[in-house]
Image (cartoon, rainbow, N blue to C red; front, side, top):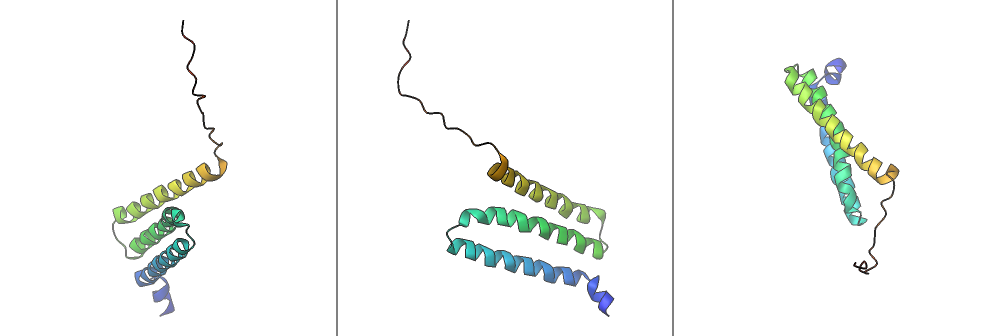
Amino acid sequence: MTSDLVVSPGLVDAILAAVGLEFALLSALLARARASALVAPLLLYLGSGACLMLALRAALAETEAVWIAGPLVASFLAHALVLWQLYRLLLAPPRLAVRSSGRRAAGP
């Protein structure tokens, strides 16, 4: 009985529902804190994990390989975007703003 629950696609559905609830709750908290710019990275972060759960669900349901590979590729892409955003935020060198002096160059 217990082993059927552990390897059941229904358990993965419950976990996916919990991830969706977590996203809704955290999005509401971010909106309340006026940090709604963080909702998109949160969606990518949780979406990456949710795609892994979808791949696990497909594997447990013994579906075709394409239904397992699709969520894995989507998870990789979402995770790569999260890493790219973190790189830009934390590690990328700061961009210097070039301001013009408003003067014209002397002509010939």
